[in-house]
Amino acid sequence: MKRFYVNAALAAILGISIAGCGNNDPQVLGVPGGGGSPPPGTTTYIQTELFARPAVKEGLEMFMDHDATNRSEPYNDTTLTKDIGTFASTVAMRDTATTAALQQILGPDELLFDISAPDTKAAYLGVESGGATGSKFGGRALNDDVIDLDLGAVFGNTLALLKVVPDDHKESPCLTTDNVAYDKANTATFPYVEPPK
Amino acid sequence: MKLSRVFAGVFAVVLLAVAITVYSTHAARSSDHQDSPTIVANPMEDITDSFAFPAPDNPANVVFVVDFCPLIPVGCNSTFDPNVLYQIKLANVAGDPKEHLVIQMKANTAGTNPTFTLYGPSAPNEQDTKNTLVAQTGTFNFNDANATVGTGIKVFVGTRHDPFFFDLTKFFKILPDRNYKNQPNPPKGTATSFNFPDPNANVNDVLGNSYGKAGALGCDVPGSPNYSAPSDFLQPYNVMSWVVSVPKTMLVPAGGTPGKIGMWVTASTPSGS
Image 1 (cartoon, rainbow over the protein chains, first blue to last red):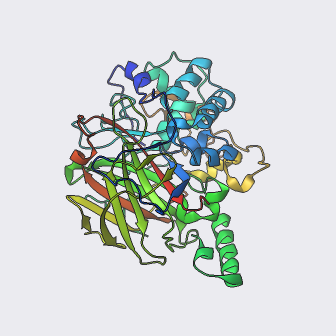
Image 2 (cartoon, chains in turn blue, red):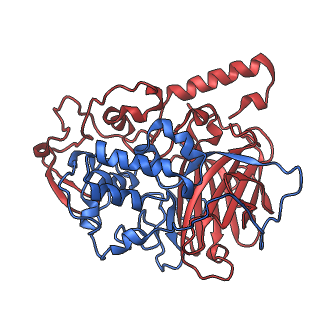
Image 3 (cartoon, chains in turn brown, yellow):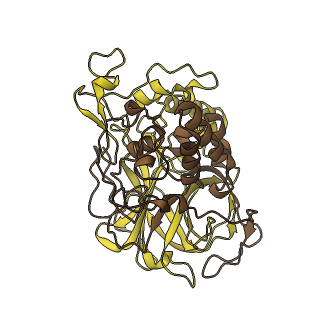
């Protein structure tokens, strides 16, 4: 498990939202530089599965709601945001401010990365934390301990350390890490993911 | 896997039932394994993880990894379904959470060793959960680490060691309702702590803050009724990995500048099941 040190003021963490588009109706686009309008009879594929930030939907959303989220665009999905609030306030027992911060930081559920950042490595929640997790590129590296980062935000005082919210003193320390370290061997050359066992 | 699309009649039904039974016997939902009944029944649609990082050997490129088909060899059986479309959706326009760029991939035939086609990166035909294919970029073979398509794009689909790591066994003791096998009437949790092998070790937040020593905090430590050594549930298993390395210049919005990008990945089928 990695250890990082807070090295940035992080008011920006609540300013991450790339949300804010008022019209969320499906759109058929013009296709500059792209595929062009599909000809009649072209196969339409209907979404059945969605994945963005690791362990957010799976850990914080009610199982019965997963199918609705899987069939939504993240920017149109109110179910996940509602369930994050319910989990934070009733399971993790966080206060109102911490609960609201978690809902805002994690919605819409999109993995953020920044191709203008000079960093040559990724670090989960790096965009949201202003680089405090190890890189302003953000994204997600193969060896990022995303579970401990998520657990720290939900059950620990990560958000208070980042000065996002005051410490609510409702941490559950025994739930802030699973004590499992990265135990795979990704490679330095394409395709980077460890060959099969 | 949708064997019913490959085989007809009773033989296929029996095979599908066996496959689902074997798959569901090894329940797991760590990063995103087996998270809805539709996905449990169709493990080729089961996306378990995604990653985005600068290429270690070429920082001018961004690497996307999409893992699917979990728990190989005891779970998903690696038989590709050409009806499943995999997409990486990218919100690369500042201030807009909608997708303005997509990368699509699908198998061209069924089986365990098909060819594949990569589509995009390109503007999507639709900003929606119902999608059509964008322009084809190139085709490539299964498990070929040297495949290139388009201009400066590397692409791969093949079996890899699942990169995710998590003590899922203990997690399900803490929150058993997160295990699909316990639906719709999950039992109450039987633990309130992960496993801590050293009672005298500090419990630290990822940012370096210490909460105190594990034993003094009442965490599960050796000797506690609920303690067992922490272990990575995914260590024995493989997944199917789609890896695509794309020049950053292709991710810049038309007329815009490089900046923050939101990413999500999806699986889709013509039937929506």
